Length: 159
Length: 426
Image 1 (tube, one colour):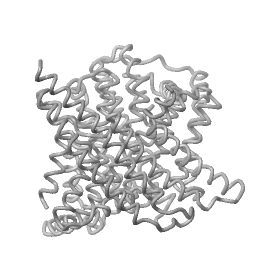
Image 2 (cartoon, one colour):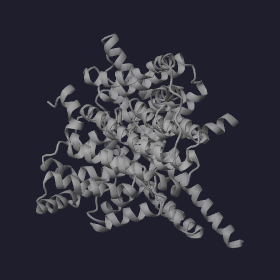
Image 3 (spheres, rainbow over the protein chains, first blue to last red):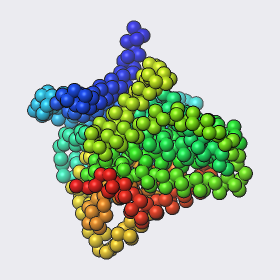
Image 4 (cartoon, chains in turn cyan, blue):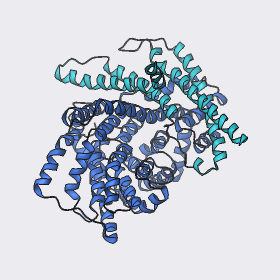
């Protein structure tokens, strides 16, 4: 049970890491196959490219959870704590609107992208699905953060 | 059109992650301006990272992290100490030379700063160097990381500016060494004035042993560059071979990499990759919106009226980017500014490869200038140094690196000789 919970809690980074390993194996494996055995895999490059897309978007969700996205915090650090708290709430609101839109329109894009890819021959939306999926994950993480903000504000007012 | 930038810069200022700021501003423009359906934005986000050359990013990051945990960084620093430790200001020179050697294996300045910093910062403090000075020189030396190949920014620049990544990588080699020499000159002067210590000179057998121990890791640049120059591998494939080599060394040869470490390395690499690549992804719709509002054309027309020579254009761009670099993160500037100014560069008859080297050296200086600088953050956190202390000590090194930048800018031969020799443009 605990293993299951920690799998859910760390799902994004486990998945992103797995795709990173897979794309490394596909790219490097293909070099070996080409030179040592003279028989490269045709779909290796396409597979690595798609795996990279999954690494990036799932990883972006994990970065949201860990707050490790690259941002400029030099200015907000100068603000008084109360105001900084307010700005953080604004940022969370912006991210909610954005990821909501990306989730919805990502889904729209997936419904449109039914063509097959060139060498793997899978429907395009299989690759694109990671975008709405990750956007939903980021939306959820941000909701949790926003709830934290509001609770902290309420606690601040009570004190 | 101006409110587009206003929204984005405003979001930057209140601490919104850079990628989300760019996406929010572009999305808002697409909806409120010409009313373009947003699934086009999502498609461009995916398209922005769906290119094979960019896959070198995770591989370079993976290689760097594997070297730091697999005991390779330690061996290289020991090697550097036997080489230059006996010069006045010994360990500070070790920081420079160690980083130059590391630069030949890793493509990321931040990874180098973390790797060399965690070893050198405590060692230098024990030897009596000031903490601020230590953080400053390790930070300044880490900026060489992406200049000497392999290099993350060159890969990103090459794929955005449509310049040969192989030629870019080679073009960085001599400028990177030049930056190191400049730093060592300034270190020597400061060390003489402050009476910093030197290490005991290594005896010949000691030097021999350290060289032998450092030899296997030094095979890495040979694999990467040899693979690219020889036309055996694409830069992306060479990067994956580099990561595989670092893994083999750390796991099978040195046996310092446990399975547990490996899991952490993979996770950290995936997260760093995402943090960088999501900005590149977000830059794609943003760049598209910029062309919709004709930003590159406007800028182009404006510069055309100025009638600048190459020399003046370089001077203006360098000063501009140095200022912007103080406040902005380098990759964000790269992905936003390069598509806009590229027409200008080509029209002035500047080789995009040379400009790429100049721009990258410039942006690396930005990583150690306050208030915003990724390498500065890393070394300050590792060394428990305040930004103020760091700033007080870093300025001589900023001068050294800016001098190197000027030389690289105005003596194009420094950058272009090696690629022209080994990988002539078709």
